[in-house]
Image (cartoon, rainbow, N blue to C red):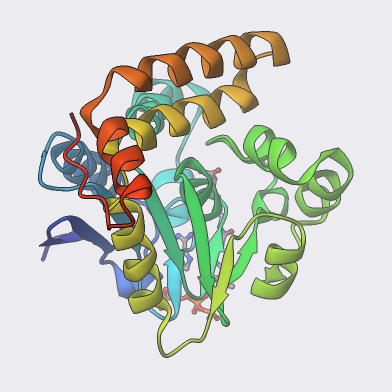
Length: 256
Ligand code: CAA
């Protein structure tokens, strides 16, 4: 059975983590399948937004502790080259929404954070519990959580390993929407379809500009934003969007 299940519903696609017996623990096989699936969808011109999800009980409970950590040494960890997989996900330019229900812990929370938007069901629980294993987050948690929620909240969460529920995650800015348990995946897909209807080049450049806000100083970010803004005036989709507004009709964007 595949560790990742892909459903194409153009213009969106859903990628479901599929190791329910271990709460979708992120084995190397799962991560390899996930990266390949996301890259293939990223290269697929018919797909304009991707939803990554798990099941109701678990988005992902983190690294596979039993297979990956028991015998691990610094050298085996180094040889696994875990960083490359996460970087490959980060480089995908099609927007990715993490639809989290149940546990998003450790690497699971980090997987949600490497996506572009996080939405949650009412049962979602986020946390970085690595400290309880004698380690620290190793897939971006100390950096992305801090840049998202600020130093003092990130410190408290990472130093205690405390789990937070969906409402608290929303309050600290980790989650964009909390949806009812019974509809969260449909709601995430509706959000993906809304984004998929927008002009793809504008969506891509907005994504890059927002990412740059976390990765650069203000001046470099503003410089990129200004150039991207001007560049979009050369697109057919800009003509279409402005014409549709002026003529009071719905725009149809083509990604040109
Ligand atoms: N790795 C491997 N197996 C896991 C797992 C994980 N991260 N999380 C859960 N499982 C397994 C359990 O061992 C159990 O398997 P068995 O039935 O064979 O015993 C099965 O999934 C169900 O789990 P529980 O019985 O524990 O379920 P629960 O509802 O009682 O508890 C839980 C759920 C609170 C999430 C608990 O499973 C838990 O604490 N899991 C570990 C969470 C964690 O520490 N994650 C961080 C990992 S480190 C990391 O991710 C590093 C990084 O930065 C990349």
